[in-house]
Length: 409
Image (cartoon, rainbow, N blue to C red; front, side, top):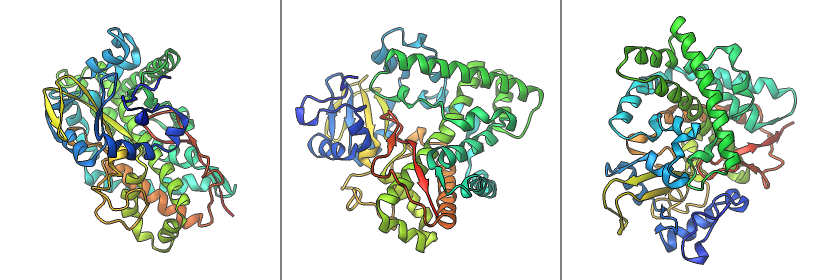
């Protein structure tokens, strides 16, 4: 894979899919932030690595998604012939107003603070169930047995996926963050993404048919009824956005739990503080989000000429916001490379911002809070034997672990 984001300066060249970079991108982010905080790469992307600059881009309406043009630039004019790319185009994740406003408005009420608060008891019970499954063993793979299963079950509940359909969703994640990466996918990766997209669409089409016949109090029924109204949602948008809700509904939470637990075990003093005072956990979640964000980048396109951090961004250019770099900006956070579970007023950019701010941010926080509280209470001797050589997934956008073995006694 070529180092497609390498800038002209040799000392700032990097390959976003290099295993060494994926294992620890933060030294590079620091060099980039200090030397060229708003920098154009040779292939035309701009990299933004300062907190205030990224926050500005996220909330400024002169930046949009322009998804089709972006994909054409990355994969050629036939990009939309790829099923995975075409399906993504129908989701609120990559839409601009007014379509984004219409699609997001259909599901917003399912993610209100009150609705999420009402889910607390159910999520707490699910955490205990996942830990009950492995407690007698004295070991588990945190990534698979807890971090993936917990949010997957929660989003299955919300979407109304019947329990006897859930096996494949709970066994492993088919979410492919590579489609969101600035570095293009190989033909093999694209073929796999297309196969996953088509399989997902087939299942969610069947689920929609089920909910037309047997409506329930769930998100799928809500969206099916909007589609049947005829003027709010097309069939293609229906299937694509249910797939998006499933993927986004568990992926960021899964990575937050895994990355966060790894960070704590690499910083045992901070781990001990949480064990001594579990009331610190809600605030610690914000610090863990900042310290090693599940989502490392997000992209925008300049819809007109815009100045960012004193640099002129021409209309039509793509801007990659390095959220992981912004979350360690010393202009925003004191001693940013240190983990501090008592850090005050932590406001990471991990959930994005502006009109595309993550719908499920509060749900992710709730799931992580309850998962960490239960882990520390039930398995106080838990250790991560491979904490120094963890297995990271091959993705620049979504940062997470493929496995995280744990033992306790």
